[in-house]
Amino acid sequence: MTKIFIDGQEGTTGLKILERFKNRNDLEILKIDEDKRKDINERKKLINASDFTFLCLPDSAAIEAVSLVENDKTRIIDASTAHRVNPDWAYGFPELSSVHREKIRSSKRVAVPGCYASGFLSMVYPLVSNGILPKDYPVSVHAVSGYSGAGKKGIAQYEATDRAKGFDTPRQYALSQGHKHLPEMKIIPGLDYEPCFNPYVCDYFAGMVVSLPLHTRLLSKKVTPEDIREMFAEHYKGSNFIKVSEVGGMDLCPDGFISANDLENTNNMEIIVGGNNDRILVASRLDNLGKGASGAAVQCLNIMMGIDETTGLIG
Image 1 (cartoon, rainbow, N blue to C red):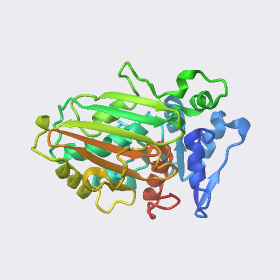
Image 2: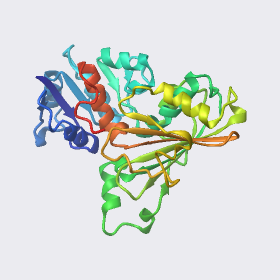
Image 3: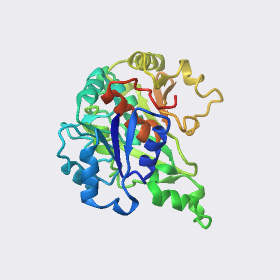
């Protein structure tokens, strides 16, 4: 029986990981007493008693947790931002390449991507690696997300009966261009510059769409929307979780609208390609709590265990 400890199991990501373990009989979940959740000695004991520890913590606490590891057999899956651009850690997006998948499989340290970064990289990494998007391209990206990504405090604000009227509307943030996902959005695909990132949090619980506009005159190759779609289809061929749209994307958004919450409660991701020969629009749709967080973490666990990566995951 594989022993699992979730450090930070009361947070949104931790609870969603537990939810995905509900019907699994191959795992033993090590629970920490409520009054000892911040007891460093109790956390240390459970981390070192586990085969796998998930870190669902703020960055500083995640770094502290890693320092507590003394058992050479304990493997860490970190859902925080702390280790995502550390080259000694595997980056937990197996579909990006066979190299990423193998590093996840063999590593003792895996960093789960950020939710926005997952949507962004699903588009940008293949475009760069296939020689279509120059590394110095002035990338701009627009994104909308459900409020569950704001954590417990943000969820409480959105669900409060006396909330401010502004919460009824999409709310743009990260105006300083200092969003915490930007380092991985630049470094993982090898871009020369961080993108101009335009995220919104909106009045629905879960799901996101990340959109990437492309001016074909600035690309390294002359391409059409269908060329881009075919490239993505080949890159993600055989994927269990990533689906690429057919021509024009109308199979995934038949009414011409991309709804952000269609993949809620799944580990699925959809890539939709539209536009024309001058301007191409690529969009990545996912559940920010699924493929963008806890679902991705469980997928990495399954790969590290050497079992079917879809185990315990919906869709």
